[in-house]
Length: 303
Image (tube, rainbow, N blue to C red; front, side, top):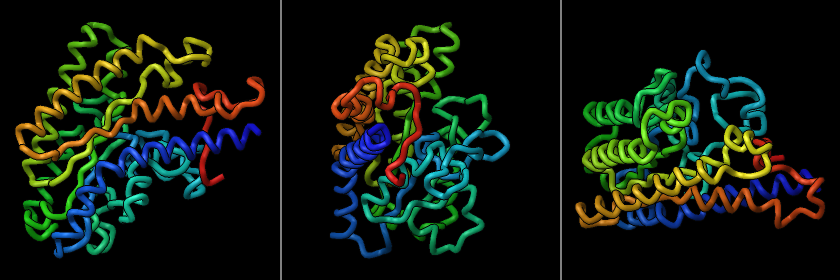
């Protein structure tokens, strides 16, 4: 029963998120097939570990050590998961190829680059991070350089067949929780301000549809629930997520008004994550014989 509950929770979590994602992103995908004849859909990915597919170096990350990735490639491959990451579930759902990691671009056939590129790097955020990886603005620099080098033929090719995913997680807030020198509202507004600059810049490079993730419930991360014996989420930390997502929604609405199109969409990882966390309660027959969702158990749909 325990294993079945864990697998059901994991699979439904991924399905729940994929449904939220596809509902918004498929519009650009279908638009491409109706109006574009210059190549396949191009998917460009930015930011952090939720979407990084092997960009982060082995020397700086535990994602290249067991038990990471053991249910997918049977050995660690740089993903912060025991299976696939968000990027791969989205592309699979959309029926397109997962884009090549930026660090591997020179080691693959050029034909594989036609699906786009993944610039995401685990451990970073919109501001400088301790790992020294390329923050979001630097990742966009990489993207712009590739366009200038005409890797994707012309800008018109990009505009007619592109989707961008910008995944914002907890890395910028991790520093805040470790150092309360500023009010969290000030930190949040600073993060959203820089994120908006990044989104506008990607759009300025003529990407048609840009999806940005709402931040998940920070209070449900294992490092936060550990203070509550892994029995509950931290309501205080979750307030940070709620406030962040409110400010993000306001900013995205402003951006869409400025562009006069629904170019920007938000993927609601907050409610998707909470729903997944609550799933074991719907399946459990005995509270002493079920997986604790707050304790960071690693499960997979591929078990």
